[in-house]
Image 1 (cartoon, rainbow, N blue to C red):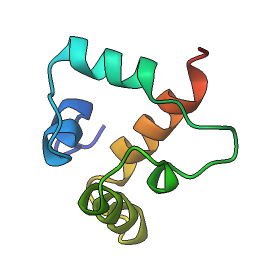
Image 2 (cartoon, one colour):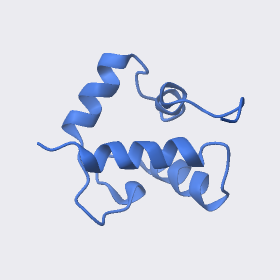
Image 3 (cartoon, rainbow, N blue to C red):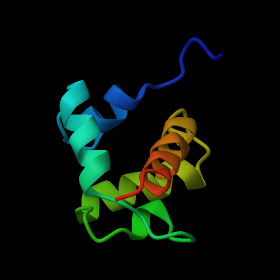
Image 4 (cartoon, rainbow, N blue to C red):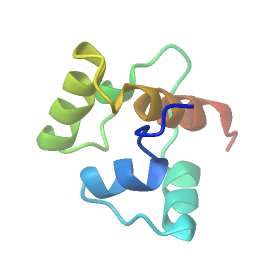
Length: 79
C-alpha cells in the first residue's frame, strides 16, 4: 500500500463532512447510489464536492483510490 494513500476519513474532511466513524457510517447508510450511477452524479453533493470528485478521478490524483472506495461502499450497502 502506498504510504501516502489517502484515507476515507481524510476524504470526508476534504469534502467538508464529519470524519468521525459513526458519521461516515450514517452517511453511507443514508446515501446510496443506484447501480451504474457515477459517484459525482449523485444528487446529495454540493457543486464544490462534485467538482472535487470529478477532478480526483480525472487527474488520477492521490484521492482517486479512496474516491473509488467510497463509490463502492455507496453501491454495496442495501437499504
